[in-house]
Image (cartoon, rainbow, N blue to C red; front, side, top):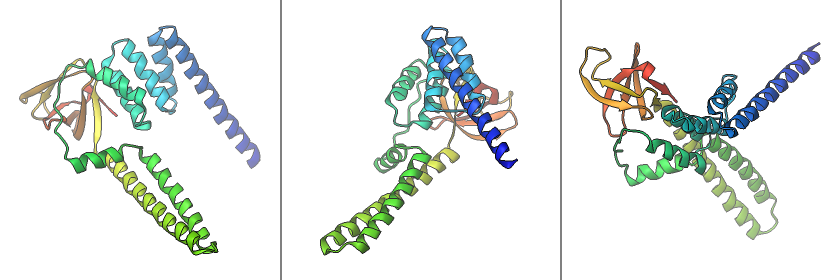
Length: 249
């Protein structure tokens, strides 16, 4: 009986994946026919099932960009970039979409060390660094076994040095994996989804207007109070906007 249940579960999951793949291919076909809104609806139906991939978000973003939906296009390019941080096509299309935004925000320059650490951290996502660490540990164990079984001093020296080098690389992987994870956990970003929103000094409609933001601008969310989000820009400006005016990544 247990075996039958396992088979049924497997079949249900397999059918679900098959249906999602068919919907994804149908969405791609609609996109190629320039039926962008229909393609968006099909992509969204796949996303709503809990599936995600860089190509799914990337194609969704392209369809939105074709319809001049700047906010959603940037949002889905960013989602795709979280999964595939080194994909040049995603980076290039994201840059095109960002060029269509209105707000010009000066980024506070980073120091050399901070820029270098962030560069290494963002080379891979959290899972990527974690897998590098696991692979390095496995190679370390293999090299250490070879070190003990080697019959010449030259081979022992090579295996010994190689094993500790690989172990050090694995430890770096652990460090950058946790750094990437903490960055995602502590830095919640969002995209402005309305054409224009007024940033307030406090989380209420009667407070002073500080500045305005427009569709597609990327912001950092640092606090939530009722229906308001406290946001921070790359240039250090801070204020409050209604939560319905943005979509968190």
